[in-house]
Image (tube, rainbow, N blue to C red):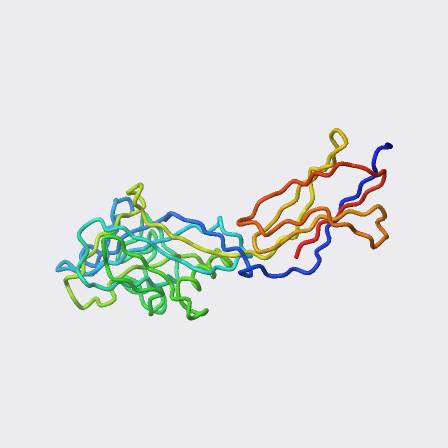
Amino acid sequence: MQAAILALIIFPGVRQSFGQSQYVRTTNLLAVADANMMSGNPDANLGNQIFVTTGVDSSGTNRGLFRFDLSRIPTNATVTNVTLKLVAFSTPPSGILFGLSLLLTNWDEYWASWNSRYYLTSWTAPGGQAGTDFYSFPSALATAGSTTTLTDNGSNPFFGLVHDVQTWVSHPAQNFGWMLAAADESSTNSLFLICSREFFGIEPVLTVGYTQPFTPPFIQGSMITNGVFQFSFNVEPYHGYVVQRCSDLAGTNWVTVIILDPPPWPTETTFFDPLTISNCFYRVVSR
């Protein structure tokens, strides 16, 4: 048999939904910066401590700052769910509600204090001013516990943790993080110490679920070995794939060689086919 003349083409076909419309990817992110703000010690910075102080006690009001690097998430991703897990450093106050508020201005982990957000740069008001330095209504609320989990209820696309993270993914320059504070700062029994990013192993963890636009299959690695032709292509969950061949590229007599069911996660597959004709064309149909 003469050497086969081969052509590989991608044929998008009609994509149909299998189960859910998109595969939800999940990533866990560790805090890249955290700090304390303490009204009782307004110029102190504790950005390198193994705990973050928030809540209120007899010495004053405390607020914590947290920021996460979201660069691992593609900018074209759609965020579907967000959870922030915080581990208590000390015994948590009983029944006290804490809120996580979107920060509207930047700060430095090793300069932030009650009075300042950067070196020689003050907050609009000491401790930050609602509406200018941070959003006046919290994106999430949770009762303090040994493990405190703040999550988004997903009911409002214009507000909440999903909204915040989506904004940061799409517009990284707006990622200033969150401020954690007692929901009611009029009480003096809500002091809460949380393990910081310096407490390795139990630092704050942000879990983000997201989807990406469908990526059509891309053929690569084609070769012939001992009369067997092979090539690889990417496959995605909730999409099936069909590999077809034909002896005439201009013809309509495409023969299905193999049908692939939707995979459980994004991966790559390799197709093998013994060559029996001198001219052969292949295409991958996604659906």
